[in-house]
Length: 455
Image 1 (spheres, rainbow, N blue to C red):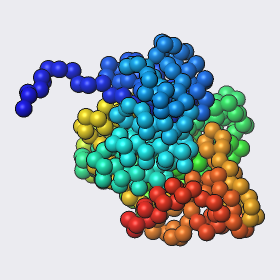
Image 2: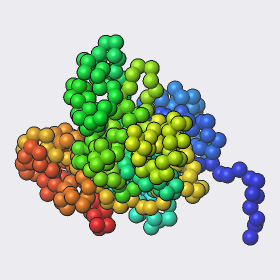
Image 3: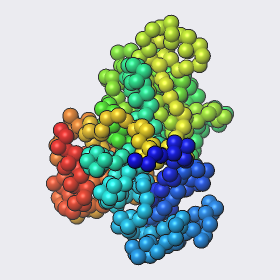
Image 4: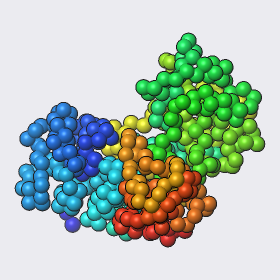
């Protein structure tokens, strides 16, 4: 056997990227030239011209980019050229090591991931919509084929799962894990107004609610009323927490999630058990909070947190003196990472998949939670459940996250229901179930049924 040169540099990692024209994709493509080993091999998006323009804007040489319409054109590429394609089926004919799935399209993303795994490629899953329906089946298939399937570092699900695993490794007693909503609530006491991204509303009552007071649930309820003119929840949040639940075994405390309006320094008090003055009915919850801050204060930046029981009071008094977030009772502490860097961090997942150095979670995902949909109003047979918008809402349905133990066995995952037609009437407030759907995707239905075999 010929000896390998231990000093030789490791081979480059070639990746295929779906949803290549999207915002996440841009951050990955912008970061790639800074990574010595990383190479884009094939970029897939319906907007091929826009993808080429994006790459040119990021400094990729125009000669390196070639729009391909079929397998023959891809085979004719010179070494180092990047194929730009509109059809995910062409991925089967491309040369790459890892697929980064970022379409956000449940069916297209599931098909692309299944094809990649079936042809011996690793998959870094960014599309939480795909993961929420097909992630368990894809993870099982990846283990069968000896490749890696993992959520992508840089997005909240992977970051939060990693953070949770770190707390477990340290032996900390985790009470809750979660993330902040996408946009902070920035309150200006001088004007009495609160801003969320590009929206502003009057919220003068927040001026007297900037501290929790003795009754934490009452303060949180008053804050929620003060900002009720703002839409703080999003289907994307529920979806991400569903992915996290399946990787960790922690489940929602309530199907609507709590969404407390909270300042970062309050999280250990807020996410304590109700018997200790907090909002949780029991330990082991996943949740989302809305950041409340003043102008000039640092953002949580869509970061992640874990609330733990403290244990030794002397140790945690010392840590509190160093600025760590400890509850007023001293019984709970919040450990947090105030960032998620999207594709800037995702190269870590690509390199780790190829080098087999680590996984986001040491355990395979299992069906601990179900992202489902309740009818917002009476929906009649023939209604099309279109998916769209920045947060991929499903028209007519309110997202809910159910503990699998409490969910009807025939409940339809929200993103399996997306883009389908109702076969019968669904009354306001009812969950959409599989038998309510006239035309569900076969690939998603098969994946979901596979996941249910774990129960």
